[in-house]
Amino acid sequence: MGTNSNPNRRSWVVWREEGKYPNLIIEILSDSTAKVDREEKKQIYQDIFRTPDYFWFDPESREFQGFTLISGQYQPIAPNPQGWLWSQQLGLYLGLSANKLRYFTPEGELVPTPAEAAQQAENRVLEAENRVLEVESQVQQEKQKAAKLAAKLRELGIDTEENL
Image (cartoon, rainbow, N blue to C red; front, top):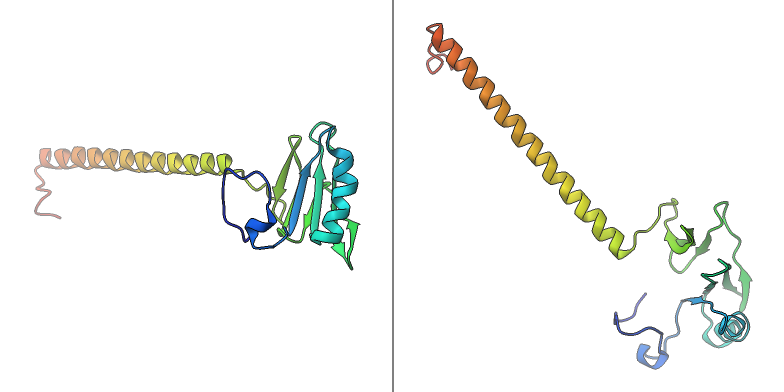
């Protein structure tokens, strides 16, 4: 999203981003912050930050809302048939999967988390290794068949070396 990655930073700091406000904000609501997030912060993000996409999610109640900035005012984002909300800034849907807020591609595919992507990559490597082992086994079986056939031909007095 145009920022420097820092895994130790848990929030956006405008002065560290050369005065740039975020293009997308996702607030995780809690009992202590929900009112401020829904009202005061929404107003700040709309009027001061001018953040194009604003979402909030309550992991307890599963409340999920999204807004897009149109002519300076936040308008609710209508959910698609799956209940997902489109983020123009991300080019992805946000929605619930297994009661967790997740990203989905425009085609409806779940975007894997880094851990899931690593597991998928590991699975692909294991599958490729298994295919190699299967092919090696088939090659070995074919060599054994060829050796048996050559031995049988030699028994019959046929020189396999000359006839190749």
